[in-house]
Length: 81
Image (tube, rainbow, N blue to C red; front, side, top):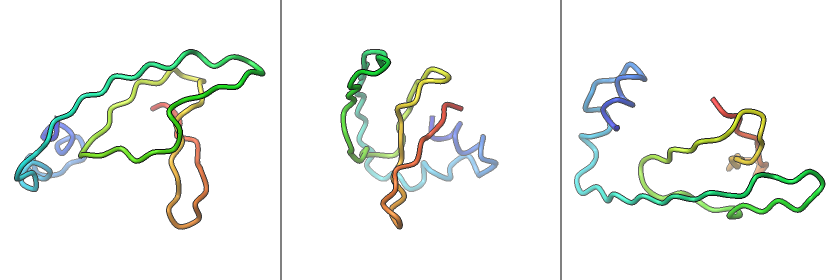
């Protein structure tokens, strides 16, 4: 995955891999219930993902993932790509 990501960004194939001396692999699968109109919709709350890469599947038109600007501390919607 790291090599494919590097190539997709037009970087040398070993761009990420050469920095991984002792990588730790962890896989966490989470599924949240669909958002309910007018209801309280809870996810996992603010947190920092550890490690190199987080893969997320998100339905078009469903808001949920936000990232925090560390300079302003504002939360910004992260749209599905």
